[in-house]
Length: 361
Image (cartoon, rainbow, N blue to C red; front, side, top):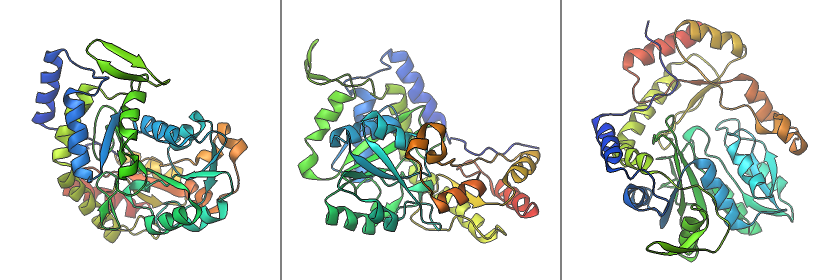
């Protein structure tokens, strides 16, 4: 019996051709952001409809740089605990304090009402996570942001192609951070990007490009200056080349993900599951089961890979000093399971997954 993978990047000959071309060129890295990196930035910016885009080597790097621009040192950043640890790590990298709040049980995105309750005089940034590709309630979050004069930096690691308020995610917050990884909707060996959406903040583009490459600026030929302490966060040419090819078929692959999600939503005999929403990009599809360990073992016996996204950050040993009771997050974290969802799944695979899940409920 063939194993059904939880994630599986959809690649073809074009990705192989561009990788071979880059390998033969000998030009594999581009700290200054020329070549394929620059082309990727332009094409991704056009796809999102943002004002500017800066490519980096990971979603973690994107969050790190965006928060660095806001100078969150000794300030508070509000975020959900139900996320990958990078969302919180990036705050600590910059000397900020993570303030974890609960999620909406329907979407598992950050709850705007909980954001409102958590705001203090020290609150500097609201950091919503578009969980699983489902858009946060940006209308309410934007309203809170304006009322309290607090910056929004979005974690859109799951949300390439997701829409909110009739716009693609990437056009709302001051800075929006993306992640490109082999398991993501837009797959690369590694990569990330920051999109900028307001004219008055476009000056940040050159600063970000300097900071992603060790603070190098004023480069003229072989001469350059260091104006700030930066990081080694630039995207490589191989990732950018693959990313350009992946971008060409992103919408088509996201439609495949939506079709899978629609079948799951309609055919899974389980009460608590991810809802179908036409504007969601479905990086993951989650269900909640009571006997999770036993369920995952049975699915493994059926050669169907499952996962857990995520174990709550505030329950990790390192983050216990920031911990508080988050009832919904903690309840969800005991039961949540991710099912396979990617463009390589056949209708036969999807049927097999649905039948297996229903059999073990």
